[in-house]
Every structure is written in structure tokens, then in C-alpha cells.
Amino acid sequence: MQDMQTVKEDYLEYWGLIRHPFLLAPDSRMMHMAGQYYECLERLKYAIKTGKGGVLIVSEDAGLGKTTTIFKLIDDMKDQYGEAFKFAFIDHPTLTVPQMIAQITRSFTGTEPDDDKLKNLLLLKEALIEVKKNKGNSIIVIDEGQMLCETPEILQELRVLINLTHENEYLHTFILSGQRPLWDKLKSMPEFWQRLPIRYYFVPLRFHETKELIKHRLMKAGLEGNRDIFTEDAFEIIHRYSRGSPRTIIAMSDLALLIGYTNKAGKVTYKEVSKAINAMMGKGDTIQYMREEEKRNKGLSVESYEEIERGRGSTGKKEIKINDILTSKGATRDEGLLTTQTKSFIIVLAFMLFLVIGAIAGYFFASMGKREAPQGLKDEHIKKTQEVVEAKTVRDTTKEETKKEEGSPPPIQTETKIPRRMAVVNKSAANIRNAPDINAPRIGLIFENETIQVMDRKVDVKGEGWYRVYLYGNREGWISEKVVSIR
Image (cartoon, rainbow, N blue to C red):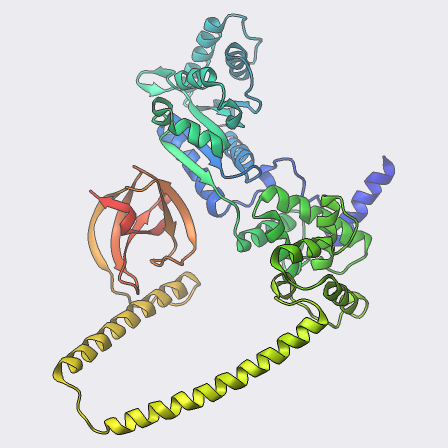
């Protein structure tokens, strides 16, 4: 036991950390509250403070951070309300209806519940009313709700539980959390779906979010802000292998740090991460993950990987980008030589073809001489020129807006001001972006029939309209006019 403690201390000291950065147990103190996690937390707080009654949180896959977000909510509510905040958290919902009611009652009363379900419901309601009188708040959380998809009788009991009210107000906020099957099941139960007006759907992290998650946890663990432990290629393999799942990202990062420590590496590179992946897969070959990628992508041969491994081994002089390894199209040395020869031939052929086309084009324009275009073509040319100028103006405006977000001086912009009105989402889901551009980063997601306040309108370079809107907490974003209806 003492040896394990020594290893742990040495491991942390080696990387300049004061606490463990990648524990798998949900820990709200280590959570990176940005992007979808920040937005979900804001919705939860909004639901509690406004007495919405029910909230649904669903993730595409397991391990995307639902439970940690709920723990963060509980911690924040404790800080805000102190003893006036009460909650029940059920993380294993495959209980009988009386057992579940008894467990929730125990959480609020602090006493042993009765064997009678009706008596427990009365005790629970009395406890919730007492919290309301003390100007506090109560939440009931059912986690892993996908386990209830085959038990409609429990779902119906939970639906009725939401209806505990006093003086026309909900006595608690009911939070149901689970994976994708839960979302589909509840949509088939409109009597339950309608009682969950606040909903949020978690999706896998994008590449830059994976990097931010790892860096944030290292910083929280005591790493100095100007020091980088993971290289870019290490980030990329972690993201690709994990498919954006925070739980897998954390497990891989932890193992890669341990391997880097045992190998006395200066940084965690593709080499340490590859070994971590193979350890997780139960395989001993240090480049086994590359072999698997080769089979899927028809990339470099195993021999080529071994050459790269030797080239980067002791001297470290050979720089190979991970994208070259994972996505390069080639095979053996002979095939590589043939590919080079083919490329050379294609380049020469393309150059000759370019010369021929250039000569023909030159003769054509020379023969045109000073012939004047018909008036109709002139008008069409003027019209297209104006369209190009207008498109460039909108594009430049979008660029200036991006610069503004990055800290540049605010540019002069022209926007269509409209009276402040409400927009209603008319699609099953709609993205909120940080700029009026379909390629701009997504900062939020809202669902059908949700309403948001519209401030003004802008047209992008493609002629598509966007509304500037406010989300919960006065966060600003842009939504396409195609997915909303204006009231």
C-alpha cells in the first residue's frame, strides 16, 4: 500500500501536479464548464428558479457528462441556498415503485420511511412544503433513466410525482437523466413529455473541446499555465479514438501520463497515447492501434510505421505529423515509388494541357478584339458585379464581427434592426451559433416549440437570413431564420 502511495506521489511530482487530474469518478470541481455543459447548467438553474417543474437531460452515448453536470448543479445550489436546499438523487432506478418513493422520502426527511407508499408520499409532500416556506428549493434527480424504458409503470409514477404542488406552484424540480433510448421513449408518451418543458441533449465533444477538457483538468490539478504536456498529435489520437467521449478521453489521458512517467518522457506524444490505447485494448504491440487504423483507412504499411517509430526513437529529429500517419494513402516502398512516378507523369501532362488551353484562350480573346458586348450582356455583367460587391461587403462584415469577438476594435456594421419579438423553433432541434454563418461554432441547441427573444437580423454571404437572439442568462447568439417562426 505504501509503494502505491509512493508511485502516486512520484507520478504527480514528475508532471508538476499537486492532485490527480484524470479520476473517472464524477467530480464537479474538475469539470470544464464551457460549451454545452455551461448551457445545460444554465437551463437547469433557470428551470429551478422559475418553477418549470420538469427537466430532461439526455446524451447520445454513455460518458458524455450528464451526471457530472448534475453534481455541479447540486454543489452550486448548496452554495446559494445552504440548508434551504434539499435534493434526492436516485442513480439506480430499477426499483419497485414503493422502494423508489421510500428512497426519495428518506432523502428529504432524513428519517426511515414507512412501509406504506401513501404515507411516504404524505411525508414527502410535507417536507417539500417546509422547504418552500423557508424560501428554499428542492430537486428530485433520477439518473440512468434509460433503464426505465421497459418499465412504463415506474415512468408513470414519476410523471405523477411531478404534480406535487402547493398554492399553484410545483414543490420541486424533477430532473430525469439518461441516454438516447430515454428520449425516444418519452416522446412516445406525450403525457410525460409535455411535463418536461426544459430539455437538453448532449453530443460528443469536438476536437478543440477535447483539447480544452484535457488542458483544463491539468490546470485544475496544479499544472503551470505556460507549460504544455500533451503534443498536438497526442490530442488528435485521443480525440479520434475516444470519438469525443469525455469518460474515454479522461481514461486515455490518465494512462498516457502514467506511461510517459514510467518511460521518463518529456511530453506525452503519439507514442505514449498509442501505448495507452493498446493497453486499454489488451494488446502489447506499441503500434497496434496504427495497424487497426491501417486496416480501416488503407494507410501506411506496418513496415512504414516501424520505420517512423525507429526514426523518432532516440534522436527525435524526424518530425512526422499524426495526420500523415493516420490518413496517408500509400502502401509498401515499391508501391510508393510507383505512386511517385505516376504523380510526375500526371504533373507533366497537366502542364502541357494547361499550355494548350492557354494558347486557345489567348487566340479567342485576341480575335474578340474590341468587339462590344450586347447591351443585355452588359447589364448582366453589371448586375453580377454588384452582387459580388454586395457579397464581399457581407463577408467582410462577418470577418469584422469575428475580429470583434477576438478582441479587435469594434467595426462599423450595418444590421437590420427589427422590433424585439419572440421566435418559436419550428424544427425538432435548432443550433445557436456565435456568428451569422452556417460554419460558425455552435454555442447552443434548442428544441421544437421553445421560444427565444429576437434582437435583429442579418443576411450572410449566401443570402440566408439570421436572427440575433438571447439565450438563458442573456447569452447572445445567432439562429437561422429557416428553423424559427416569428411571433
